[in-house]
Length: 202
Image (cartoon, rainbow, N blue to C red; front, side, top):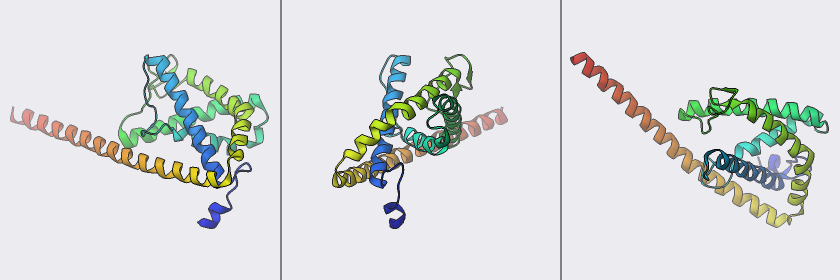
């Protein structure tokens, strides 16, 4: 495992640089989510799963996008189309996983036209295409240069702090959310059993 991590290279970055790169995109995704929700609802809301200001789904999304879209990374038009379709599919799959785990999705597009079950919508699909072009065409060059400028020792320490902090935060809130979901399901099951017994007596 150590050899795998020590030999890891992604777009010229070692594992510690990659971790910081990953969390930068996770933070930027969190910021974008908060701004969008502020515009839609009129108040600020923490859009991360846990308390730390990261939406790691964006970190993973950008990572997979760079792998899948490598053949077209210099074709902005193709990136727009691929980004719009790919991100929408990723959003849909994420929603399905959340429904299985928690019985709910933490966003809702019901108020927008051309939506599908409130999970995906035309407006967000159009927006994802622009995000893909922005990341590939402009943002990533600056982010990579920034990460590579960090002192190696600082880079190691910062990456470890980020990983340990986020995992601890995530596990704590994930466990609490699962327990809360199970409690709600148990309550609903008991309520149904109670109603059945009442009607049976009647």
